[in-house]
Image 1 (spheres, rainbow, N blue to C red):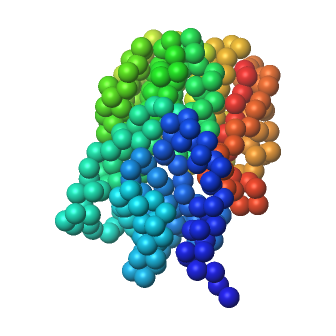
Image 2: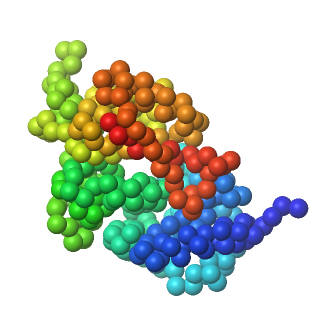
Image 3: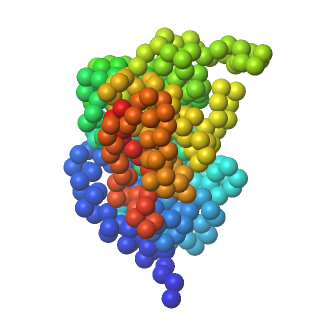
Length: 338
């Protein structure tokens, strides 16, 4: 007999009781309640962001009956939370369902969620696709906050800059966030203003390759193979005590190609050269088909070839609201002493 959606939701809810108590005690009210790929309903996720419950489908839309079943379950368990449903099962994960009236008002209202005491602006529905705070990176932000007091941080592929803001909140001496998307950086700047920060993070709109080459001292040419490169901000060479590298699975620009399956080294090496000798480089890899061992071996060989061998490494695992299949999380995170 196939278990009902309510059964799966209840099992997931019960399995998180200890974690949620710990998170709430440290002023965190943003976490995953249901991780469908590992909890019986592949493609369905349910996240809490403060007083908002964000339900998203990535493989196929919820039927009206399933959506009603899910709504009834959380209305009983978490009655004070408003719910937003985003159907992202169409091409390129774009949100395809339309909301109207009260639902649209709820989804479009700016809200506040907290992680380890750091306020983060959030909105159930906005011009982009992903939530502004990526919850699976909580363990990495936690580790950054432990590492960073009095140190400098370079946050690459920064998205909305949550890692940089967490670092600034924890006492970083200097923070630079680099991302090519102006809308993402705008959210980051709003979040930075929203927080009480002793140091204001810098937000740099740039292709990551152009920024890394300049910061590392390699330099970025304005002409490559006789072609003028797109405009890019000019940056002085500077290394950082800590570098956070969170690239997409695949991306291509005139400045370079990110390919985490076949060539992680192309983005890893310049990030490594931006890291002060003796510093810390934290890397992520979101490609589920890449094994931890193969990825680590690739990084070790790349670092040795660059003359900056990895001295120590430490795996950072997503927290237990993101269970992996067979114990292996899709998101892999490595802290490297270089």
